Length: 457
Image (cartoon, rainbow, N blue to C red; front, side):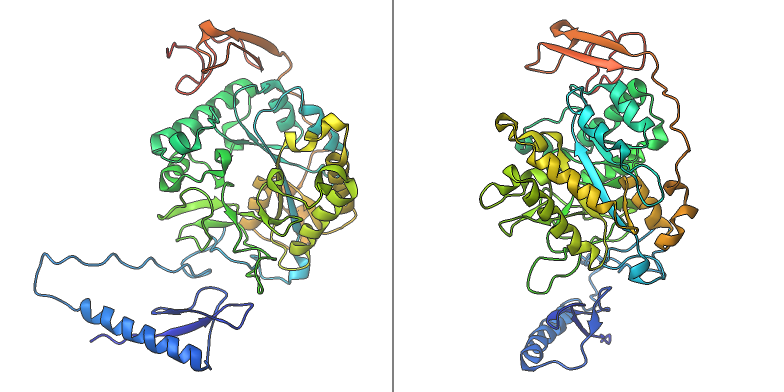
């Protein structure tokens, strides 16, 4: 009978029994050298189960006997997982330097269409600077319908990241996104990428990220589509377990990691991947703690007791500072504020600017901190691949900026109008689309027809 080595593991923060392993403790856990009576009891029960399992798995003379699938290999940083191509999931920062030298990254992202209505709001931030005197940068997860591609081009020119958020953004999660196979995910990603490249003139290599509509993580079907398309990262996957606030003994906020090995992240929405995808990054959406003590991945879903997050700029500013400090004063995992533009105008009927004012005050507060950088997700991941102390950020290309903004690659803007004869999506009778490209497509660009050059009726 084969000898088995058993480990009792403790959580890195708490002193509670975590799990028993036949191999070794997880990263961040340690072997418990002294266990109490309760742990001894648990160990005894698990030992019995272990030896029963071993006995049932003994060799057999039956050549057709079914064998169990091999246990997935454990991710061990520096041994079977090496930067810049692989990083194990962890609550600890990469790089061999002290936590005080780790830059605190803040990621601002916005979902859905870029339009003439929301562009002025985004443009307000172009005067805000990081400690290196470069403009702050944001990530835009763009969906197709109603998007003005001349404005997408302008955001890209100003240094912001343009990422993918689907062509259709269908609202039917239950019947469309949840059961979607790889072909559906691939078409939604690939066709949108073609539409953006063609109409906003953004280079293919600059489109790296993806966020699933409604954060409906699509399992292995979605991640295999990303892998085939050559995308670099996903930012659709919330985590409550790996935060700096949840529970009596918080695990700590999760840093970005690659899917070379099975993920340690909790699965809240949709279907999370079971397979491995070498070099494909996950930028976890670390849940915020709202004003009623609940979790929210997007600002849109954060609640308050007396609508103070709707009516009070001071309350909004304090809420953002409180959540920021959870990361800044602990493990300095990237701090994400993910939103839809509409959240800032939800109380516009009462002429309230509380959310916009509180958000801006918070960004002004961040500008006073020499180790805080507000940057797009693609820049965060460049640092993850080659981590350096905050004092050396200037050595990385991703954190440099030109003395002058580049010239526009969209000097001649075309505003195209489409009607029902141009294969518009269901329930839409007219559509306009500003583009950096001529001539006008024969049909409205859409899923399975990204260039609008064929009928799909």
